[in-house]
Every structure is written in structure tokens, then in C-alpha cells.
Image (cartoon, rainbow, N blue to C red; front, top):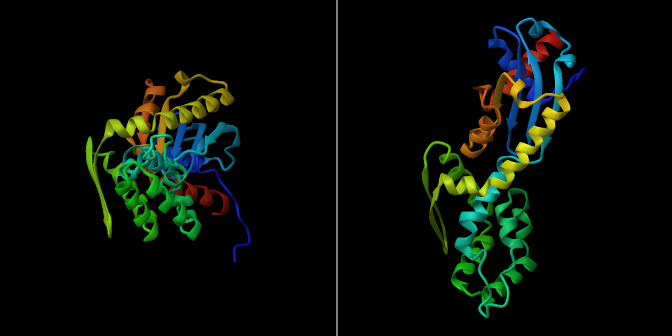
Length: 268
């Protein structure tokens, strides 16, 4: 029933939400670290500019990278959880490592359903017979057979979230013939995310280059998106802009609030 539809970039919406509290002109970098992507915008904000309907001139640059919270979950799972089911081990004769593809699929939310077919089950049972540690691979077989992949992925995400608040967390997962337990330290999460963090940092560098400015010109680092709370990510962002004031907006609501502000200007 909508007769007129307009679109706005999520990072810009987050900036519009933040702009309600500024008292003078600032040059901000919006870091929107979401579930599937990380998006960055260099934007001018001020009380005067907030009243304008057209903000195109205030947007100096935008860029992004297809890395987000689900990637962080996958990397943590591969580092700490999948080895509990034989990932990284070899065949009994020591001649080759076990196939890594099933573990990668199980650790990747949108690929989990690929495991649920007869051909894959046959391959997993064959892998179990050849494995150096067949009891570990047996848990992988049982988990896939019971279609518990997304439940496992949810537990990994919970562990990642817990490490945003505490230095250690206990990971536990149990179903039928599967018992997975391990302690995860925040330093291990940091190590798992190192390469992803570097890719995010490079995307920020591209954003600044497109804007034609250095990081020292940024007055305010505007953080939004749930994955901006991951300690390694938050530390990296603050480290890139040590002179900027870091502002944590509503991680899950700032974009919606900013879109409401934008809609009021466009259609009010």
C-alpha cells in the first residue's frame, strides 16, 4: 500500500540519530558492524545541518566489507568448537588431514543445511571410519544426523556475546550422542578474529582515502551494530582513532531511530 518509497544508508541513519545530541560541528566516522557486513561513513554533523532535508553534501565517503557477526561466529567455532569433533586431525594412517569442508559448513550459518542430505551423511561415516579419532568424528555424524547445526551455531554466538562482558566463558553443548565442553578466553576470540579485524581496518582506510582525509581529522567515532561490542573489534576501532571521542549509540536501535528522523523530514 505504500505509494512512495525512499531508501537511506544504514550508517547515515545512525549518524542522524547521533546528531540529535551534538552541540557543534563535528566530523564523524560511523562504524556500523552488523551481522553480515561492516559499513563505514565519514559525515559532517551539526545542529544546523540536522535541520536540512538534503544531506548529500555532508557525506564525504562511504565504504564497507562483507564481514560481520556471523563471520566472527564461524571463526570462533573453527578455532574452539569444531576441533572437539575432529577438525584439524588426521586419518588413522597419518597420511592426510580429515576433510575440512563439513566443519566449515557446520560453522557457517547459511551453509549448515547443505550437510543435511544422504550423500554428505555417507561421506561423514566414511570419514569416521578412516579417522585417527573416530569417537570425535562420531559426534559430528550424530550432530548432523539430528540436524542440530543451527542450535550449535546459536551456542557459539552466545559464547561470543558472553566474551563481550567477561574474560572467560564456559561453552557447553549436549544432544543425544554429543557432549561438547570447553573454556574460551577472550584472548582466544581475539586471535580467531585477527584476520577479519585486519580486513575491517583496511575497509576503514579505504573510506578515509575516499574522503581525502587522515584518521586524525575524525572528531567522533560513532559505533553502532551489535558486533561493534566484540572486544577485539571495539579495541581495533578505538586504536585507529585515538584522538576521536568514541560514542556508543543504541547498538540495535540507532539505525531505526535515524530512519524515523529521516522519514519525518522527507514526508512530514
